[in-house]
Amino acid sequence: MTTGSTTGTPLEREGGGGFGAKELRARALPAGWSGWSGCLRGTGGTHLLEFALVMPFLVVIAVGVLDFGQAYNLKHILTNAAREAARMVASDPMTNQTCAACPDAQGCTPGSVEVAADAVRQYLTDANLKTASCISPTSPSSSGTLRWSYSSGGVTLTINRGYVFTAAGGNVVPSTQVTLQYPYTWALGRVIRLLVKGATLSLPSALTASAVTQNLNKLLKRRPMERNDRVARRFHDDAGATLSSWQQAW
Image (cartoon, rainbow, N blue to C red; front, side, top):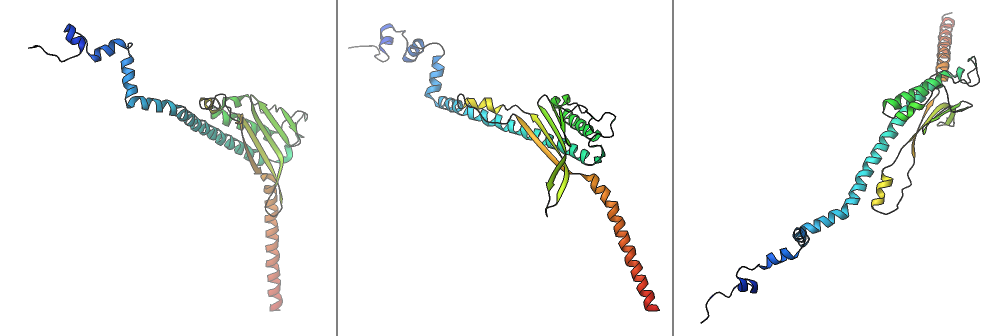
């Protein structure tokens, strides 16, 4: 009659103090491998793999949203600066457009243009666009017939007092156009390489804004004349009505 227990692994039956199956696997695998193998065998490994595949897309989307948001904000600032400059120039008289009143007409910049350029520089500097501080209102980089341009540090400002556009009805309207260009570096162009190795995006290196305002000085000159014409016509009508009443009375 055989006595004793026959349960357990062969190693346990032989030595009485042998290792079980779990202990043998733990000693056979390198340190730390048991934890990773458990993750790979479970659902955690699937989640980790999915996250690794989705991560580049999430980064590109996040950077794209931030990049285009900053570009839109910069475009808005440039448009406001150009609009303010156009209003200032268009409301000034055209008598100093050729610097004829300056002691040194050659190389002279009209006062209205200098004021507009300084307003753009101050507006952009206050908006934390420090590159615009290099603009010198009294020293345009180039000038032509009713056109002055400033260029420094990638920032370009162009003031065109001879701009015209055709309104409804075919009327030609003398106006002032202010065009402003500011450099912008896109982060999305570098991040896109996470999806496609060596990929490049064709994005503009600078953002441009433009504003057009009708020259108001001519309107201001025309309004008093129009008012005098209306007064004369009214006086003529009143005088004619009075004369008619006298004739009827006689």
